[in-house]
Image (cartoon, rainbow, N blue to C red):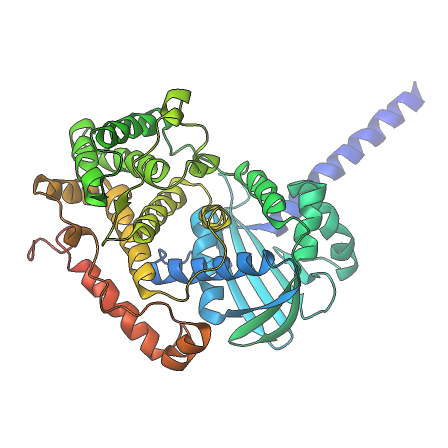
Amino acid sequence: MKLLLRLSLGLGVLALLGVFGLVWVLSHLIDDQPLVDPPLTANPQQVYHAKQLVKRTLRLMQRQQPDRLDISYAELQSLNSLLARAYPIHSHFNPTTDGLWIRASIELPDNIFGRYLSLQLHLPVSPQQLQLTNVQLGSITLPDSWTRRLLPSLVERVFGQQQGQLLLDLVRLQQAQEDQLQLLIQPPSDPRQQLSRLLERLRSFDDNSGLDSIRIAHYYDQLLREGQALEPHEWVSLSYFLAPLMLNVQQQAAEGEQHLHARSAILALSLYLGSHHFEQLTGPVLNEQQRQNPPHHRTLLRGRIDLRLHFVYSAAIQVLGDAGSSYAIGEFKEMLDSVAGGSGFSFADLAADRAGTLFAMRASRDPQQAAELLARFDLPLQESDLMIPINRLPEGLSQAEFRQRYGDIDSEAYRRLTDQIDQQLLALRLYRDDAQG
């Protein structure tokens, strides 16, 4: 009897110590204040920086041989806003000559210990597999020997063994400066298939609760009807589909829900005039009958199919980011399904990207802004309401030509031209302020 009593007492003490230990750990991991403040809302230029970084990365991966990837400071910082839009993570990247320092604050659900989990770590320059050093969780510093053993297991547990190993083998940090990182990309043997699997794995972490598949399918049906009224070989403007679509949103949406309906309509447009692959981000939407009816692909923006695609893709990706689905995955998926290569840098493509992003921002983020935008569809929609002229925008610039004329995307010459594009977009009838409208 005494033995059982002592055993029970011992187990009780151990349990109590365990509880106190857990409380101590949590109190040192979690804080009420973020280590990193939330970034400002991503602007079109940051969106473009992130997109160019993804595009260059995927092109290198499709070469099926190791190659160098240079990342500018502006591109690196654009990832902060990108990450914050996709997940409740506020981050800051600080490149130095000895590697990349990362600080992050992860927003947590309501709890008694605090709102944020703080993380600090260092990625040193190394010719070997990516390493982590100086890892600090809250006020607890982890020995480097722990992180060397735990990192591979953690990555494989989160992403699966094959995709986890893909991530670990993909990148080497070769050189770091205060304004640039130099990575070595080592593509997998089958980059398209491996990346598709990785993206599917990432999509399983997304919260698509802000998306309404039934409503998306409803607006897709409308687009099908509009397309079926055309002759198969007839060329039309994007405005042919967008105007009645937004008028339908205006009629269908209850007060205060205009932005939610616009969100669904934009995603329906991305499925109809973009790619059915967006269903990998939205989840299943279309039924078999909808899949069997072909979209009217002879649809142009400023006389070009590629500009229509840039507009539609960028609008959809903006919506997916705001709805809680990963903006990063959306960008990867768009590039993965597009044709590799290209005809050089195009400011017309950039303008169409920004036009699509701006349209989605105004239509789908805020009910008041959405209502104001939809009211402007009472007048006939012209292409000049959606997109600026492109005849004076430089296109087809090789990398050497771009560097000669603009230096890089942080240069004054580049910023001056992109600012002009943004100002011209904001002066269009759909977006200018009421005093001008």
